[in-house]
Structure formats: C-alpha cells, structure tokens
Amino acid sequence: MSTVSESRPHVILWGVAKPPNAPSSSGFCQKLEAFLRFSGISYELGETVPRKAPKGKVPFANIRHDGKTVTVADSHFIICYLVENGLVKDPDTIADLTPVQKGESRAWQAYIEEVLYSAIVRDRWYIDENYAVTAGEIFGSMTWPVRPVLSWFFRRKVTQAIWNAGMGRHSQEDAQSLQKEAFEALEARMSGHLYFHDTEQPTRIDLTIYGFLANTLATNGNPYWADMVLRSSTLLEFTKRMTTLLFPEYELLLRRIEEAVSGSSDHGSASTSSVCSLE
Image: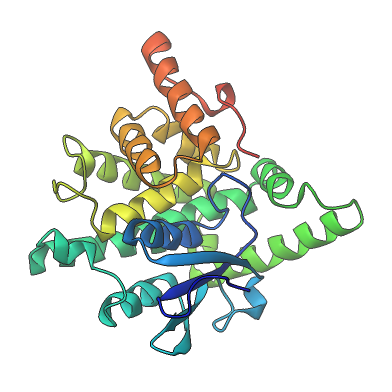
C-alpha cells in the first residue's frame, strides 16, 4: 500500500472516509492527523469503518518502525506510542511544559473529548434537522438504495453509543448548555494567547483543540456550537492560524472563517446560515 522508504518510521492512519481538502468527519481522526502533520512523521490515510477497528472505533494506526509493524488503537494511545518510542518529538517537551501544565492539558483534553464533543455529536444525530444535514454530508455521494440504509444504521449505532455513554440521556437543552459552558471556558482560556499555554509553538492540547474545532466547523450539522465559534474572534483566529500552519489545503474551511470574520466586522455577528457549506 505504501511506497515510502522501509527504513523510516511510517504511520497508516485508519479512519472514516475523509473528503478531499477538508477536515475529517471524525473529530478524533482529525485530532490525530493534526498531530501527525505537526510532528513531521511520514503518514498516509486509510479508509475503514469502526466495526473493523480493534476497539470497534476509529482511529487506529499501523505504525512501522525498526523492522516491525505495530497496530495501536485510540488517538491518545497512538500519540503516546509515537512519543514514548522516540518516533516523534513530544510538543510538550519541546515547549518545556511543567508537570502542572501537562496535567492541565490532560484535563482539558478529557473535557473536550468526553463532554464537549459528545454533546456536539449528540446534536448531529439526535436532532432530526441536524441528522438530515449530517447524513447528506457523509453519505450524499452514495446511490439511493444504499444511502438511506447506511445512514439509518449509523444513526442507530451512534445514538445508542451516546445513550450508553450518558450524554443521550440529557435533554437537548441540557446538552446544549454543556456546549455553551465549554465554549465560554475555552474562549476565556485562549483569549490573549497564540496557544493554550502561551508558548511559541503549539503543544499537544493545541493540536487536540484544533482537531475538534476544524471538525466542528467543517459541517453544517452542529449549528448551535458552530454559531458560537463563528462569533468568537479568539477561536476563529486560532483555527485560522492552525489551519494555515498545518492544512493550508483546507480552502473551504479558511473561507468559512474569513466570511465569519467579515460578517462580524460588518454586522457584529455571523450565523452558520450565512457561510458556505463544507460538503
């Protein structure tokens, strides 16, 4: 599959199908690719479905190094494996973060991944209007008999997983209140800084935050969350900076950010209905 040199470390990132020149529809896949892109390690993308993954979820990775190939599942453990085996430099070590700063990063990572993103995904699949948009973006290129069956199947699986995790047991109002709390906390924490810890370069938590911001702005399926972000100069500037640094090919995402900034300047705010679709 790969044509890269066998002598250098190489990663195959297995995840859901990714649209060309746009963020992944999986926040965890986008987070991991952001880390890989920033680290400079050789990598490629592979397409799969969650049921074929070692833990029943994506991403997972085939990591080739030192004459062997190791399969590691879960974005967090993939990053840990790469760092602990000396295959990439740890951004936190480069930035000389203290143990307290590393602990803060880990706490924010859990907050974003387990609470915020779970609430956002709930919006995508539980709310009928958002589900119609999400299904169209993910399955829109498929033929008619296949598309409704697959979208129904994935909706059932995702909503059941969200229910089992607890987020699905909340009302829509409660789930969106959790999004608002997280938005306000994140905007306050990032305000006045280029990066989370006021470092000169991104650290692990910046790559995590960016992965989920890019993912959530690359869809029109979570308008409640996107509307808040598209009104925040702090988070828009951060997302633009990281996109320009890591994924300059994400032209539609950059255009969406620019239009939001322009709308804020002209009208004081920007709504998701006024920006272009990233389908």
